[in-house]
Image (cartoon, rainbow, N blue to C red; front, top):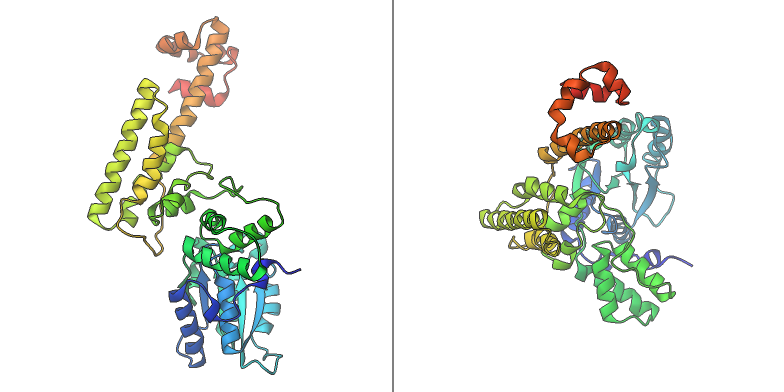
Length: 392
């Protein structure tokens, strides 16, 4: 039995939902290729489940083109790429119905490591000699390893699907399959998918088999960069509120990421001012929690830093922005490392002197003079790295 996302993949661009701008650019690329007015390859990039591969197949059906699909993770090094992809780029279509052929190479941003050495440069060579258009897909086109490849390609961006677009896709499938799933549940599935149509379709399959709806605790770890996009680009409160739920990053660090990257996204002065005003309130609440232990403010902090910042802007933002790490994050990490070593010194002194850690901390200047003696430091069991810190 075919998976639902394969069974109901659009057979034509008429059936396709969303990505109008990207599809128009993709269609123009194929047309320009036949007139030799464009580059020989395009790099189609966007988040998982936004329809990159489906769009290529739908366009190929409309234009009667044979698609030869290859996955970059299966053809990683120079020799294999030259042999497999290189040959495929020169051979004519095997099917009489096809008016031509295109090469689809998936997940080129997955090529990395020693086993891929020479793979990307070989791929550029194949593109230069190809007789057919080459379409490559990637989640992130701006990763450093694709710098040279980008120069050989036309870049086409597919954006994250909206909740309504995902809803339209899964609604059609539910009707075709005659599944008994309410519109309320479908809308919830669409929201939880966070723009990933494939994930939403899989959730429908699970729901129809009585496995149960995947809810807000979907086990899907995300990067801080994707979480930032959900706050800084969206105006959907539900998406923004869940932005930091599935990342392994401290909340204080998330706020620093927002502080650093707000000016890169919010070009409108009024929106930027509102966002920073909200972040200042987050900092005020944080101070009250630390000083007075008013932990009930934590929920307000989270809501302000996510939905508050997201709704500071007037409209949803699109386009790629390169986010950067705040310098204070690195300084905080260094400080935590230094403090952890200091705490180790205090604890060992307290054990040997039968004192409390707080008392040793209070009189640490006195202990510093003693710890300059290497014999005393060794007696306390301090490592060489700790001794160097004490000597400073």
